Amino acid sequence: MRTKMILCATGVDHGTGDLIAAAELAQRSEAHLSVIVISSVPPPPVGDLVGQAYSTWSFIWQEENNRLNARVSDLRKLLGERGLDGEISAVYCAEANINDEVADLTLLGSDMLNDASLLKRVLDGALFASPAPVLLARNDTPVDLAPKTVLVGWNSKLEAAVALRCAMDMLIQADSVHVALIDPRAAASAMGEEPGADVATFLARHGVNTTVEVLASGGREPASVLQRHATDIGAQLVVMGAYSHSRLREHIFGGTTQSMLGNVRTPVLMAR
Image (cartoon, rainbow, N blue to C red; front, side, top):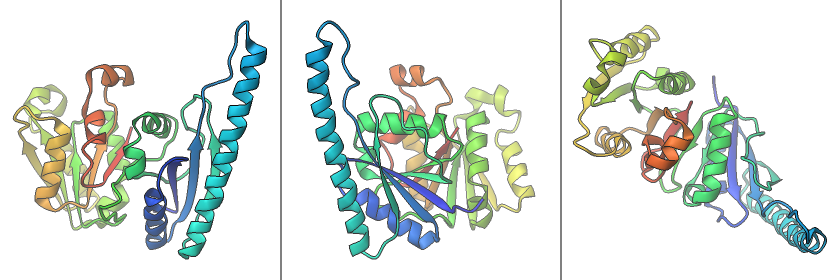
């Protein structure tokens, strides 16, 4: 499916880099851009002092709401001055994840990737409550929705298969697609006698020029291995599944998804 609508999430205290990068990508891709500017304060208080406490909270909420609306106005003006198009709206969120926006692709840029608290809420909402994939991309890295070389991180799990399906249009148009398996012997029971053969056959039937590569981690994080290999082969995009373990387990022990968030060099398309 061709990307017709790109969603960009940015915080009220973020810079303008994420917005400009998203608007320029939408322009190059002939896609509509929808931007949400997010702000939040703690939920309203409860308890014996609810009257006084609620009055204080209400004042804080109003001040933050005014700041959010002013930010939206400033960003709309910025796009107009640069001749860029985009629909910008305010999202005030007390505590829930951001999960009610609809798009073909959610783009998270440098400012969002550096905002650990807001990033978790936005990413959880985008991955767990939306069918669209998420694209992680630093603003100093070129983003192309028609990449010539793509690296697919493959482990035969459902999340990897979903990400693969989300990226199929890009893979079909690419000149070369590298399917990377990291330490596949550790999961031979799940990958079969010839790890990667199943996905290579699937892609070949869709006319995708595919190379299967087995990578040794050497004790390094899989995210680091994938990003290093992407650099080595000149990939413009990494495709991978997200949260193959539970969010709680990843939060406590870490995981490839968590590691990748702090290690984005080549743009990463995630889905689950």
